[in-house]
Image 1 (tube, rainbow, N blue to C red):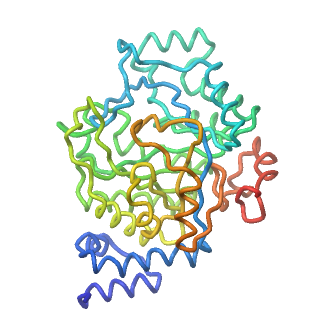
Image 2 (image 1 turned 30 degrees about the horizontal axis):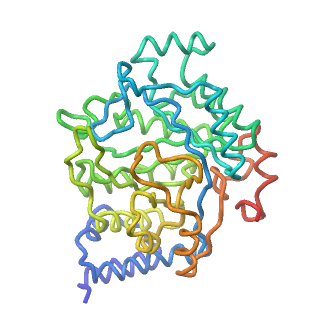
Image 3 (image 1 turned 90 degrees about the vertical axis):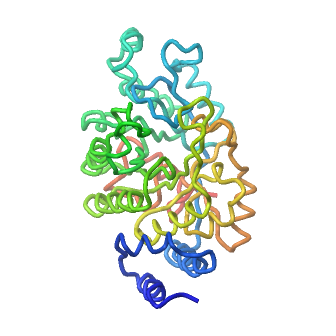
Length: 387
């Protein structure tokens, strides 16, 4: 049985009231049997507020470069310039990947890559200059144009950005993204996972997210669970995102991503969060944001718990690729879309394909002018992909 305090919290959430940090912390203390009450309530948000629709994006993953000025303790993707496996993709290779994605009816081209490698590596700066660009962001803009010509829509995650950089990417991206990861400066301190990562300073990441809001760019962000943060710091990070969204209204999606240890990294022996922690964090996020923001947790990082993931309150499975790997977590394969459909429909939800811009943002306020006609031509009256 629930205690009086927990019953009161349950009914407060049921009435649609906001919860504070202390109340959110209570959810972390729930037993498995107690959690079921809150899990049911979280699932109900998706049925009632999102009409039972759970979405996904059929995409290709373009790892533009694995060179990065940051050196996060958990990252197995990054390489140094003197490493034989380091690279920066040339335009022809990117076009080849995109054309393959078009052949498989993918609609999203996800650009994820190391942050500002030209700042750290003079050789990369000279290479970009040889190609006619002063920065990786200028190069990305041209690649996004090529993606659009072929028939896909770009969504880019290039790291922290200045206003001018956001402006040049705005018109050639359906949306942009940057994980907050965590709002605690502690993780950037000595011995922390972001000690050697100048781009992971929370203040800088928050600034980028806010600048995107000022420019009315549909934006994806989220937190990384299990990298040494406390439960309280996790909740504070979610509340920070909520505060930004209340001011600008541009955050279309929040990702709750669990840390997965990578071989040959300083954190390869660091234990990942247990699934109960993930489940409770997703539920807390749903209660903090209610129906204001789409909530996602990567299915390939939780392959044995897809049903519980769905029932925790997510309403999106994220990007699923029939063509490319998850280069950030290379050992974690994407589930098949047919498998996600089976699980989704088993619980009486409806699976719908979306674009990299969510339906609620397909309007004159947020639509990139350059992409407006293209986007409107492929979505139905609800904003999902026409069947």
